Image (cartoon, rainbow, N blue to C red):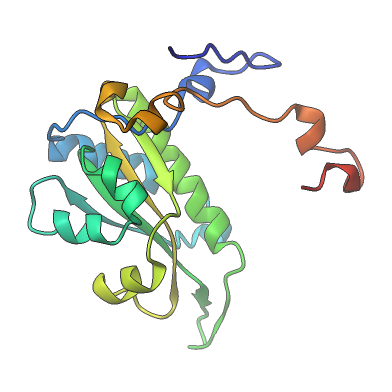
Length: 199
């Protein structure tokens, strides 16, 4: 049974309706739909308009699908195998300067997160769901997908049509529901950091 999540203040429904399921229908996604997701991500904001994010992807059934699954920890591979698309988000960690030198791009992961979120929201608009994950073999992703040293491997994601929770192992079925969030007064404070809200 899906829980009803209610925001504390009025926000656009798309922010509350977005969630990260694990139960997907094992169906193909048209490439045009996938390109729409990446187009949405392309328009994310970034420091200096550097656009440091890069997406590496595979659609189910293509020659790289099994490789992508093998880069997930077994727990994630077990459910992600039914998704339509698997991908990895990486981000460039340095910004080139006109004089040929470079400087650290301290916002690279922040910017990549913005792009990922736009992808996830666009997925919802097209009738899909997206699930981000860090349960991956980071070293193997770098090696097997030929990620250059100047890029950081951030996370993986699965996208697909929502499936039946019955497709999941019993231990995951009860968790197949949207999650609530911490209250506002625990995530934001005026003026100074609120030390009482540390983990």
